[in-house]
Image (cartoon, rainbow, N blue to C red; front, side, top):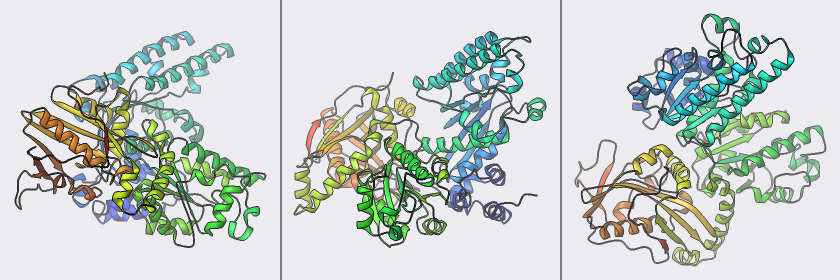
Length: 635
């Protein structure tokens, strides 16, 4: 009998003692994957199935609840347990809504149906081989499957346009039990080509459907074994097996993080045994390798993978117990290395504990600890970081460098719905941050620094292609997010469309370059009052007068339009305390003064009567002012 892992035994003990709700913040650590393989998410999900969500939120009010609707061609309820475990592993709660067996078309199109009424964040529609084969005659050939594929693609495209939430489809594995019913190799090859063309066209639907994600099952099948158990497929119509569903649930867990804006931004790497073979302090620069030997080549492949991630906006940093001069010399001159010192936004090399390194890196990059991912081959260092820096995600590498890439990628820490130009430019932005730091160090005062920085700000409607970036900004911004909420692209489009609705974006630049789209304001006009429903600003431009300039421009525009007041709300969160006094500093006063003026969650409503307007800071040059009319949203 297989021994139950320690992490599940402890989870079971909490369950039996009735402490799961109170201890839900401990669950991610209990389910962390130290061995790099998939956790027993289904077993964890079963233990968590009876959770009282209200009790969890009573103890841990900031726990994200993700509503997931599940439907499909066949029996798909078996995905719920592993999915619940996967979301718990990332500190989220699953609210599952299960469709009826085999009724996915009705589930996804019925305007009065349960799935649509649930307003899901994600709608999973699991496809399998019967999606096509249920539409072919009893005696069939590749041409019949091709016709069925065309019809299925048409249905999928229509579903993508109208399904609630973000619709998730999947490519469909071709079962041998079907392909080998064709006895001649020519027909079998034709069927394989038709099948792959169907899957390729399904994947390409994402290019034109903003709210569609297609999970490619091929990599999961390649690593996970059989697609299904023939007996379960025949007798229970469970056509996707437990192993494949567990791997699929892991991918959905990563997707749920992305939908909720919980994408990690920075990969912090150890050096010895992680980035190169050897111990720098003992072997010297000439004694470490990332090429030229079997083990060295594995480290080189890992560096190539890391550089690929960096090219897509993942920040890199170093945390190493080594002498700083020796580390920088090696990064600058070692002939084997793919990664060089300029590739890293921060380098910490000394003999301090690594949790202190990570805290320092977070401060240097102005990131929260839960934006970091730490990869190290030392179990002792990983354990120390888990204890001393619990918000940091930890990747467990080991002595076998050939597995480093697999271990790094298995949890999809950097997965995002869509890559923006700002993502790709992030590493360059942090290089410019160092240049700004040098300017600040050489300035006599902060005011002198701001004048020398030559800040410019524009506030206007978003351009058509910028809605993805605006959505990303609202979902990922924590420090200057005045209501603590974020919106998907579709939600932004809906909330900013129609008379009286307002969506503006802030763009900023300085003497070191263009910062791009750094802020957003969402509002609505009712009568003669403009209500600010949300305001966001990237933490990388905080403290430079950008936020004050945007609000001054907005208030001035409100008065130009003849409005009598601007209302706003501040909702405190675990991260936005720095913005608590922002509205009062600009002349807003509490709409309901007195000790009872705030709501139970600490939120405060403010009002500005537009009698005395704040000025744009003197050091800021205005490049665009908000104009009238509807924002240029997606059509």
